Amino acid sequence: MAEEAKAKGNAAFSAGDHEAAVRHFSDAIALAPSNHVLYSNRSAAYASLNNFAEALADAKKTVELKPDWPKGYSRLGAAYVGSHNYGDAISAYKKGLEIDPHNEALKSGLKDAEAAAAKSFRSRAPPTDNPFNSAFAGPEMWAKLTADPTTRSYLQQPDFITMMQEIQKNPNNLNLYLKDQRVMQALGVLLNVKFKGPTGDDMEIPEEESPKKSEPAKEEKKPEPEPEPMELTEDGKEKKDRKAQALKEKEEGNAAYKKKDFEKAIAHYTKALELDDEDISYLTNRAAVYLEMGQYEECIKDCDKAVERGRELRSDFKMLARALTRKGTALVKMAKCSKDFEPAIETFQKALTEHRNPDTLKRLNEAEKAKKELEQQEIFDPTIADEEREKDRPCACAYAHLCIRTHAFHYLSHPVIHVFSAYSNRAACYTKLGALPEALKDAEKCIELDPTFSKGYTRKGAAQFFMKEYDKALETYQEGLKLDPENQELLDGMRRCVQQINKAGRGELSPEELKERQAKAMQDPEIQNILSDPVMRQVLVDFQENPKAAQEHMKNPMVMNKIQKLINAGIVQMR
View 1 (cartoon, rainbow, N blue to C red):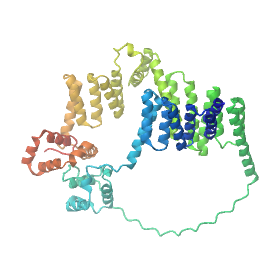
View 2 (view 1 turned 135 degrees about the vertical axis):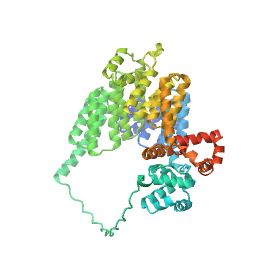
View 3 (view 1 turned 30 degrees about the vertical axis):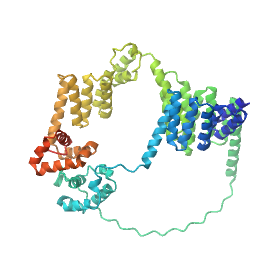
View 4 (view 1 turned 60 degrees about the vertical axis):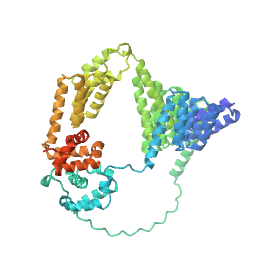
């Protein structure tokens, strides 16, 4: 009897009728109160109803009855997450992983709980200190700006006043206005540092806006009396009756589904859909029946119709997510190779964007795991790589993608194959296409796989150079030259970086280039820390006013290193 009630509960849960599932699982628990699986299932049903208090109680009972069952801790963690008790959720998931370290559901749950805890902490935490807080604090800021002849004129411009007020309220807003030369000039005055930049006619100063005339206050409209309810028309009455009949057909379909009478269930859901096409639950329920019957193509068609119609009707996001989840499940059932899992994974991801459901997340993780396992099992055919390379020889991106995608392609028995070179080749392709972040990522992966491969440093340095991170590119080329001192590409790359850095140091940059480089540098936390250091502020002042003291500072390697970073960034220029 308990197994029969459990089967009914499982069927109701699969059909999305979670309230009925709770009732059936409760009946089963009354007959078999020591069965830990029943409490686990009811906990899942309660969680789906957002009744996390009851879900937590059942999860605790599950763990109490079966302390060595990993799934019980998965239920316990999910209930704690739903109750926003992230600390206990993390502990529950970790306890489960102690029992089964390879359990993907527990790993995924732990990751989500930690992310939720971090997000919750950030929402409560006070804003972090900014190194420029002291520069913008109090009325001293306005006094300094008024005292300087250059910034004094800016105080007549309303938009400048607004920007400085925003920065004073929250110094983190400084990054929003760094490209405005007036803000850069004001920052130099407040930090007692003179920034080299375009002046006079080169500066763009927006014109003062004329104040808008205040509009006369509109008279408040008196609330109009609500119209009396109108009697339903004949069409309205007919529509209401059809909806009632459709709901009755749905209930009969649900009953037939629970009895495994799938043909009859489909007939009832189809009839309900004919009576009322404004409720997509009839489509999702029929899709569930097709899924049980193994008619996956029909299931996918119904799910697609439900999503399309649901968007037209602005249906609940949960209903759209349910349809997408069922479609993804059908695609998983149809998958025969690793590539077949890609549309299923994409569908699950779309479902999660509509509504983040633990069941959908679990199915996504299982699909990704199955895809990875199949990729490792599939035999790699070298002729495929040659075909892809011939199709796109000018760039060879397809060949590189294929090599990387098949990183586990039975080359375990052929360790001489150099997979890292594929990342190097693709990094070169990305660089030519202007996709510099992707090129940098591939180059770093190449170096990670083989730190002695000098070409990896060439690729990485080139990407950093075109991203105008000349100091970082210089360091990369120097690292490569330690491995291969005679490498001409590395030597040429280092020479180009030195030329660009010296160009900035000699003040040979155009006003636009200087403005861009300074704005980019000011977003670098390391540059911000250098400029906010009181010792370095005094050093910069001595460079301008006390050359003898500046020479003494230059004997300090740490100070010299920081000065060099400011020169490379275009903040400081040597004459």
